[in-house]
Amino acid sequence: MDTIDAPMTAAGLLEAWRPQSSHLFLGTPDAPRLGTRFAARLRLEECGLGATVLGGVGSVLRGEAGHRVEFVPDPSGVAAVRLLVAAAQGRSVRFHDRAPRLAARLPAVLRSAEVPVYMDTVSVSGDGCGLRWSGPPPEAGQPLALRIGAGPLASNLDGVVRWVASRQAAAAAVGVAFVGGAARIGWHRWLELVAEAGAPFL
Image (cartoon, rainbow, N blue to C red; front, side):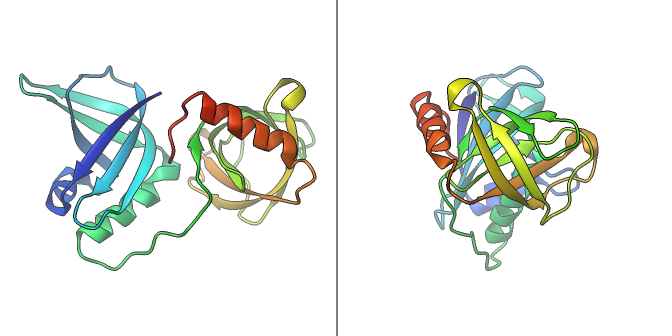
């Protein structure tokens, strides 16, 4: 997955932001195809706040001096973009400290369902993961039993739902915090492999 660096002034971010759609317009030297997925590394130059957000290309306006891409953030990243917008508007915001996250797609199975449910991660960290949910979304606080990865390093992990970014089954993104530590050895090896493969930090 490609990464686009997007340092902006506060005025530039507010000009790029479309609050009705939660989309951003970013300048890029290359013109990606519609639907292409990438990680946008957003940063406010004045205050140093930043976030890396996954998403896709909604439209492209081509020009001789550069191109303008309509960036469609994934549901799990919209809150981070809104925090940056609030900071650009001069409001006081607080980014919560958290374990470093990597953008990574790993196979995941919900073992705690009556019938196993198959899905993928969108982000991973030592403390949890973000899931592109399959089927009806869970409730915040719901305990989960997951199997993430494949082969001998696949890890059985217990977790709890921390947030649900959408209540629509076709677009649900779910954040899971892991609990317990007995199964984490294989999981940390997965994190090492993902980092060695060059997955971008979020």
